[in-house]
Figure 1 (cartoon, rainbow, N blue to C red):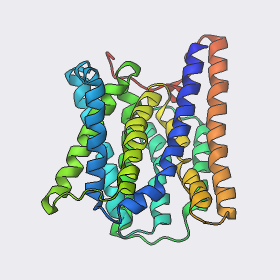
Figure 2 (figure 1 turned 180 degrees about the vertical axis):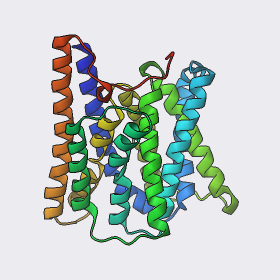
Figure 3 (figure 1 turned 90 degrees about the vertical axis):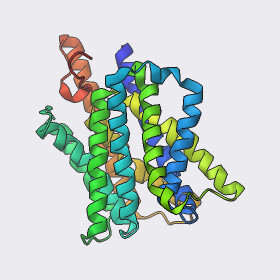
Length: 309
């Protein structure tokens, strides 16, 4: 029962995380009009890293060399995803970028099945397909494939690898330390990329307030939540849950940006949320069956650990 409660909490936190990500759309759009993308990412994540190190530096010291290196690798994957998506967005329509980035929901179980030989049940594949179709309905109005689209697709691949690696390496007791290391890697790499042209900082109180929100909720909170939650549930379940981000982004656009409620939001958003519900319902049923039979729930319901972890 305790394990079930922890899994439900992890699911709830991931859903909350997608709401936070969705709420940042307007903030990011405004900030990158005044700050170069790499400067924005570098300042955002480096501030988050400094704050968290001052608060919880002992959590880094407790990681040990192997987990420290894996945490840095996770940070490298997330950095690649952020940079590829951001650069790709410069020449790719937002709707196409949202669709291509969301393809991590398909890439995650595909990589897990082919490369890691995870057993993905047919019902889960159906839920993944429904979520992907929901992304098409919600975000896609047309597509042509060029350099920007290729970079964005590369970002989706990096996101998928980050989700899989986090589920494989993250542990509950070290989630905070792993998160802080990732923040340092992302911040330093992005800041180094923007340094040759000089680092541009926010210059108004409103911009700094937006940056503070990004640092506290979309960086510190989000990184810890994803790392801790993925220590409790599988990579595929996490990927399906996180496809709710564009649903919330569209909802915030309607609530605060003056956009209109459309059939795309109702149908596409409903498909994505339905896929999320199906994945959680199927996982709960498998857990109940496994509990009765006193057997493991299977590869899809639990994160995979490295030997000796």
